[in-house]
Amino acid sequence: MRAEIVSVGTELLLGQIVDTNAAYLSKLLPEFGITLHYRVTVGDNEARLAEALRLALSRSDLVFTIGGLGPTEDDLTKETVAQVVGDEMVLDEESARQLREFFAARGIEMPKSNLKQAMVPGRGRKLPNPLGTAPGAAFETQDGKVIIVLPGPPREFIPMVNERVAPYLRERLGTRSGIIKSRILRVAGLGESSVEDKVKHLLKNANPTLAPYAKTGEVHLRVTAKAATISEADALIDSMDREVVGVLGDHVFGRDEETLEEVVVKSLVEHGLTLSLAESCTGGLIANRITDIPGSSDAFLMGVVSYSNQAKMDLLGVDEQLLIDHGAVSEEVARAMAEGARMRAGSDIAVSVTGIAGPTGATPTKPVGLVYVALSAENGTVVQKCQFGGSRLDVKLRTSQTALDMIRMHLIHNAT
Picture (cartoon, rainbow, N blue to C red):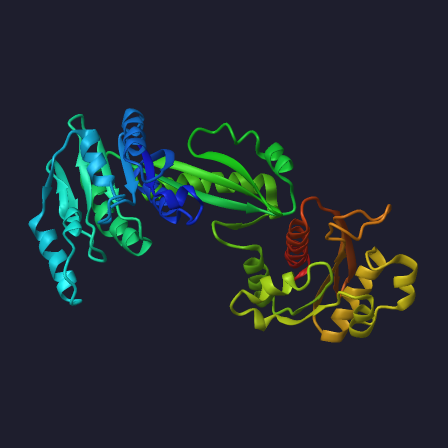
């Protein structure tokens, strides 16, 4: 079944609010085997909304509208849908009674304009809204298509989707819809082109499918399976998951919402190891990501933001001559920072970063994006030279990803 979402509201077009409702609905529909083909946004204009609805019905079996169910003159969604599908709106007495009770409980006389919210399709059904004054509705066309209209406020929209729309879809689709389920495999330490080249033989697979997406400092591979049941879909996804790991190995660090910092903290705690950090160009970003994870205090001992040369000397014991001879952005200083942090904190592992985040500060031999990441542990110190592109924030984010992945790989290959 093909679906389309039509979000209604001039404030959406102007960028005054973000359409989180459409995103929420988009994630739900695959559970019913419904494929979302289009998402459209239209302002509070009756003619343009009608045009968008006619186009949606011409190419989709199921259309959702979000917003435009209020009592004001620019709230025209239900009326416009009724006009497009040739239905007649009728007053739902139960909804009208609830509206009057809602205003009476607040000691307010109900404006007559609010009664329009109690109008429902003559052909179709009402979708009650227990958290608001505007019920939704399912308009059922004569040729078997459906337009489901839903309110815009998220506090009303989400419960209605879960408690009203989901049961309606189950009832209407029965067992014939199947499900569509996805899993995200998260990859670090490889660029998008490298990942795609390694898994290109899997990208042609029909079910489940595999699709790469580039993110800052990592690559996501989305595995999507179509099946009759959740367990069958999981089996298909698990099989593809194993194949990808067989190709990419330890570069696959997590799944779905699992972040790199979560994986690192979990691994540190499991191995009973401690970590300290010495950050320059990232300004404490790595420590922030680590400490965002509950339980990180079991492993994280100290973070130093040694932004100036003096701080590198005073707080980490970096030799002034190293800074004079090689500069702050150098392999030698990165190594000294990591070793100094490990000694001062008494940690099992220490990581340091020093670089040029830009857009200023570059020299002919040290361009913007040049970063050194060092990791010091009992078995020695290693330094990785990186050249990142993008904005100042991009450089900082990519540096933090590299540092966290360096810790993760060290734990995989060295911790016992």
